[in-house]
Length: 330
Image 1 (cartoon, helix red, strand yellow):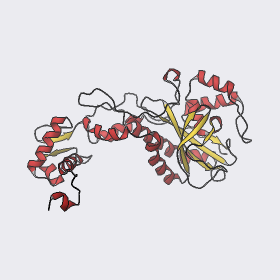
Image 2: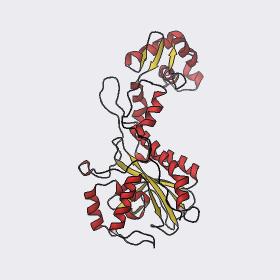
Image 3: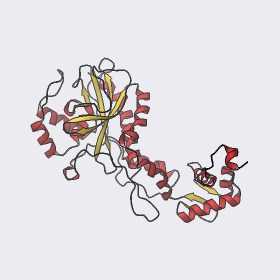
Image 4: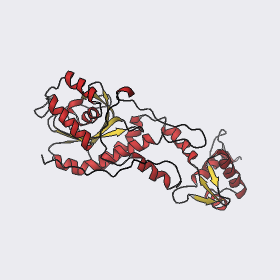
């Protein structure tokens, strides 16, 4: 009986590849540096086999050795980022939305801007709180939604001038902002604080809070929200309970997106990246919504530095999140 038959694998299974991957997996935050003997013990390989795998990884640029211990090199990130670079924004966002909904017990969605509307591209619902059914592909006028206002606030002043001159700001409820001047003032506030709060402007009884999602270049490409019924929470309670989890979720989505645009080590000189849909052509790029959160690279740096302390991935522009203003109670 062959080794593959004994382990239940078919004839196409390459055991040497399995063993090589086990050598890579032996390194983690708790074990960033390992000796040959430690790798052999961790993987169950003989010292001779472990040595061959380690030396191969060193020669390929995935590891380095100081003569007695081995460590991973940044080039190892190519293996994971090749997967991340194939993901679309909805695929990246969905696990984070599920975690957020489990935490706050309210529905959460991600939208992009399409003309004057927002389009839902990912959603995790809980109990239905609207009279209309929301699903991926649902469209709403951007001016009356929290995510729409995040995306509008990210546009250039010239773009906003054209939008406010042409958009039909209909009163969808008795709370909807229908004045171009008032909407411009609200968008300026959102740019400053980095998040948006909407109170029953799309539908009576519906309140929502939203935050921007940026790509690796810092451009706002989408927005994420939490929606709730007005009877369950005041505006101040929404901010107090939901804002930090929402910003954290946006930051985690950004990290996963930004992870695929990290400099590729080993001499290639390029970047691996995802290409989410943009809100507008580069030539029209304008101010982005101010972030009420730390630079997304900080989280990435922290994640990588536990395994690769000398990784050159860092940002000189990291800042402490600003104080978050609280609205008055509803």
